[in-house]
Length: 102
Image (cartoon, rainbow, N blue to C red):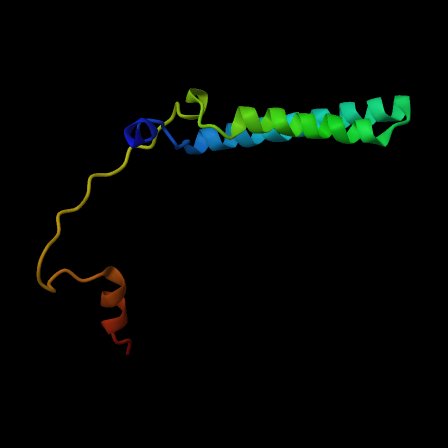
């Protein structure tokens, strides 16, 4: 049963995150403008809130799941460095601290 959940992708790349954020903000802004205009015309503030909440629900449905359109630019990671034993390999910051200036 748990293997089904492990097969579901749960990540987005950086460009996908940017796209999701832009879509989210665009839908929220559009629903707020439409809701405000509709509420102003019928003189009911409650409908404005309903329109904004509906836009929020639609934007969550479109941006929260990691849809394939948000995973088109995967990162290519560098290969892992092999582990070395001993203290011959020092960090560059340690070398800078040991230098004495005259």
